[in-house]
Image: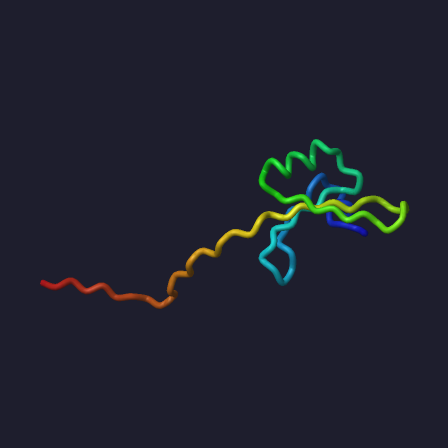
Length: 84
């Protein structure tokens, strides 16, 4: 499995997963435990998928836990009147 950190050659790629509200953090294949632990400490939840059998690397990624949505403000203008 490829991921954005491998594709871009970076330590971490943080992005919003398409068609969702999920904040996703990809680390390169074989990332050091220190990097993974740092994302854990920052509040990301670690996910791991091991391949069937013993072939291939373990795929690790992090996701931010869901947060409750903020109430939306009305976009309609409101006139304020002052009584004299």
